[in-house]
Each structure stands twice: as C-alpha cells, then as structure tokens.
Length: 118
Image (cartoon, rainbow, N blue to C red; front, side, top):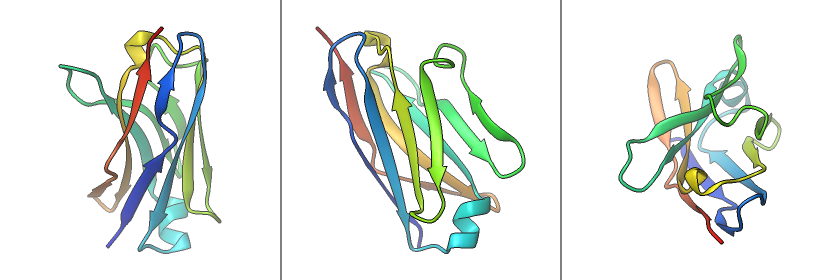
C-alpha cells in the first residue's frame, strides 16, 4: 500500500518561503518515477484544488497564481516530491496534500498546514 507523508508546513509571514516535502513508501522506484504526482491545497472554506503536478510524459504544470512563485521537483531515488514556495500570500494558506496517481489509483497524504499571516 502506497503511503505518502508530507512535511515542511508551518507559519510564515507574507512574502516568506517554505519548502514542503512528500515522501512515498510502499511502492517501487519504477512506479514512483513514472507516476503522476501532484500538490493540492485546501484553503479555509474552500474546495481542494490542484496547485502543481508532474507527469512522466507531460512535465510540470502549475495553476494560475502560483507559477513563478512555486517550484515542484521530484527526487526519484529518495521517492520524494518537493514544493518550494516563495512570495507567499495569505491566499496561499491551507492544508497542502500530496497525491500520487498510478494507473488510475489515487493515493493521498495526510496533509501539512501552511499558514501565511503577519
């Protein structure tokens, strides 16, 4: 069973930066390397939304509003996905979830809270 564990969330001032990590276990290197992985977030009173995703064939894509501020990367040998977030605003506040999709099966982490506030 695939397990995803996010880390790196916290409280940051507007304009600050955070780097989230999502470590996968219970899968293989080849599956992780070719799976589609994504970062989602759910703000207070909002629906969960896709922030960034990376697929084996499609590269990395970002939702409007974070491109240029957020950078997603993947270390296949560590089976870890990262989300570097910069120039954070209060609108970036929410619980950030990691997702792995492999052959139409979705796996989710438990989420990590990001709060942007002065």
